[in-house]
Image (cartoon, rainbow, N blue to C red; front, side, top):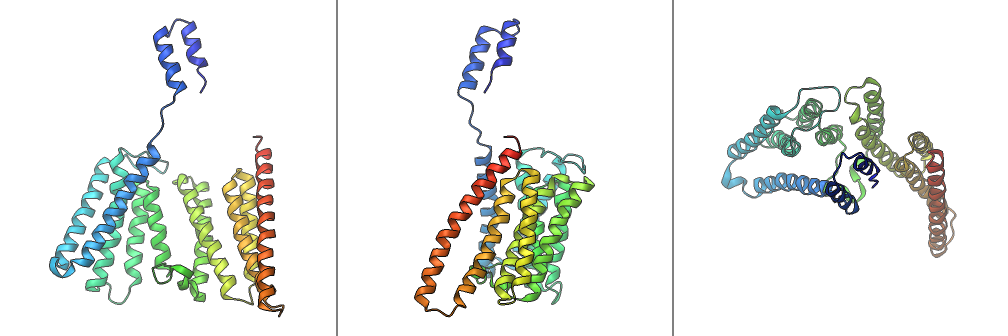
Amino acid sequence: MQTGLFDQLHKQGLLSDESLKNTQKLFAKPVVSLYRDLNVLLYSGVLLLSSGLGILVYKNIDSIGHIAILSCIAAICLFCYAYCYRKMSPFSWGEVNSPDVLFDYLLVLGGLLLVLFIGYLQYQYRVFGERWNLAAFIPMVLLFITAYYFDHRGVLALAITNLAAWLGITINRFTWPFLGNLNEHETIYAAILLGIFLICMFYFSALSGRKAHFKNLYHQFGTHIFFISITIAIFEFDPRYWPWFMLLVIGGAYHIFKAFKETSFYYLVVGILYMYFGFSYIVLDLIEQTGIEAKAIAQIQMLYFIISAAILAFLLVRLNNKLKKDAGL
């Protein structure tokens, strides 16, 4: 860290010898920021608390009673929202800083408990009848309102997750290993459209200037939802995967273009890796269709991965160097 400004102030007599020495000591051994570490710990605490409440409900449902559990969840949720409403800064379409440390975490906890409360209410009392989608739609709307009103990216992420759940895109302990819930064509189409919609929200936020700082979160969710759903479409529609692969290439080209436009190595890696996954699946499928013996197929596939991985690493390094060169770094 440069101390030239302090040296000039010392020469002008505006800074004492002792103050200059203390400043030089400070910059010689800069203070280590614990901001990210504390953030991780605090958000982990919120997640553990909400998970603990869920386990408590599951294990003690008979002894505690449904009304008591719902009342407890509602009371904590209302307390979180009341505290945040009292402490919040005036609403603005621009970025608003959090008033204190507790504000962010109580708002996330309130959002999680809101989803838990409405889901529990529907599961136990069928307040929406057989319209289970309403149990995802209502908290989704409330979470979007909360995210924009209180200006919170964490709650916006919860709202986007509920939007995906409302469209039927969910992952649980049964479907997680192979994302089995995405093997229905309607769900694949919904996931692709959701990814495109979220990327469009990126441009809407940027152009309209309304909560423009939310744009990157929209784009990151949209990017991964789009690419994952397209990749699964290639698997699912085998051997009619060529239209989906072309869509994957278009999406990858868009992200590479965006990477060079914004000097973002992240978008460069994302675009190339997803295209590599789709391309590798097609190559492996074509190898298997050759009709040669299984042992030879395994050897060819192994050779492909060795060569392609080396080419991929070389390509990423070259493109990263070009990215830095274009940025003048």
